[in-house]
Amino acid sequence: MENPVQKLIMGMGAMAEMTHSFYTAMLKSGASPQEATEAMKAFVQAFWTDSMNSARRKQQKGDGQNDGKEA
Image 1 (cartoon, rainbow, N blue to C red):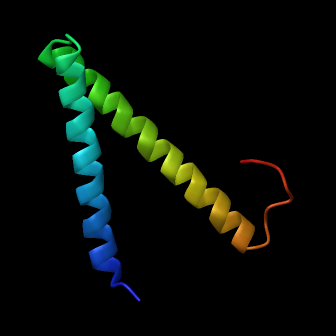
Image 2: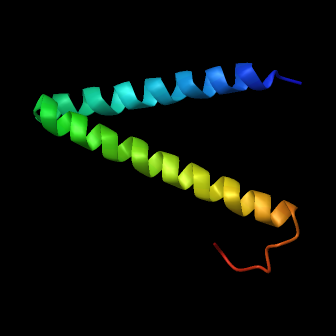
């Protein structure tokens, strides 16, 4: 079983790589650095929100509190 700290570090590394790729792609498509930064921040916020919502649904389901309805 993987150490939770190692899982966190791996997850953060993966997120950093995805974010860098997103930012670079924005610049290559003609966005200004400011536009690329704002789009990157929105990407991270959307990713984080989706991840947190998925974790909440999983926790509710595991606790038996989910009646089949989405949160």
